[in-house]
Image 1 (cartoon, rainbow, N blue to C red):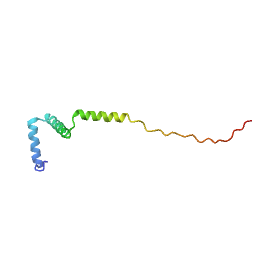
Image 2 (cartoon, rainbow, N blue to C red):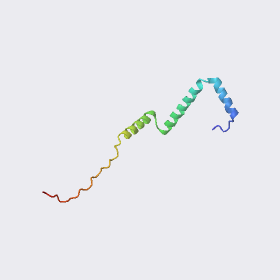
Image 3 (cartoon, rainbow, N blue to C red):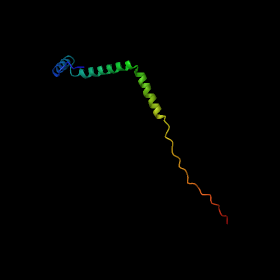
Image 4 (cartoon, helix red, strand yellow):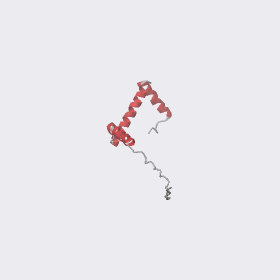
Length: 87
């Protein structure tokens, strides 16, 4: 993307931006640009905030209603069928 710019050109551009906007405003601008790019990518994919929240809620609900794994039932040892003696 910036293959035509060398380190000196990038430094010059950063210095000009620093003079124009100030050190306090640059992080705010960068985060705003990041949010704008993220929203643009989401709109290209057809996902908006409401669908993202509904998908997250649906995944949460599906995860919480999963039944526990079946428990193994222990079988009793077979009882021998010996005749009982009556006295």
